[in-house]
Image (cartoon, rainbow, N blue to C red; front, side, top):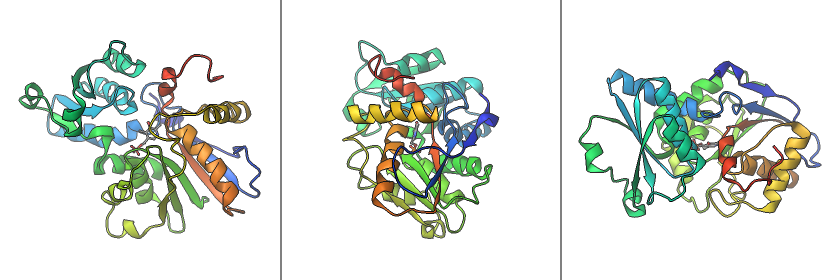
Length: 294
Ligand SMILES: *Cc1c(COP(=O)(O)O)cnc(C)c1O
């Protein structure tokens, strides 16, 4: 993993005719194949805390296609921590690429029923062992603080609008924390029906941070988490052809597609955008072969 590799790619073509917008992309996808994108930064402070408390084992929750699960497995291996993933649902006959990779990285998988998962019930045998618990998807203040630290490493003074995809909202909260006066952070949820998401983001902000400019645009989730259409994949292929930037269909594909549509309907003329490419490319392995040209 090479955190120095992250960079800002300038003058990206958003594949629409919106006039007068300049779009740059923060390429967090290039730092590592497994822990690509935002996950390393979200995990950093949890791992520091676990080590400070001299925990040997980190336990977290996720679904069978969770980037957080595979990133946690890899980050723990690097830091000599044991990792356990509590996975939603019965063990599938055919494991996803995500689960296989996480296991290769040394994670122990525990499958629990959807009901138990909803209640976040930790199996007793795990509860009895000393461990450090990280929320599902890495949601929490340490996660947001890791993102804020990362973002401050880049000079963002020129940007009016900063865009990101939203799962748990942790990354968005981190960007709000790090944002400068006059900047607007726009998050696009990739899950359907998340009426609580704004409060989840706010719960990670201080009173002053809550007064900063941010909003959620909730139209581009394509009917739910990891759902997609031909149109979305078509956009991702075109986008790659023109900009040579690969996107993932779960998060960043929807984000970039959403921005390309959103900017047609609103007047952003003269604005400078910074779009966060938060990685997640390993998720594309679960698409049928031949759908993507990259
Ligand atoms: C996890 C993830 C997100 C969402 O981050 P949250 O902090 O949960 O909102 C966005 N993009 C990618 C590629 C991810 O893997």
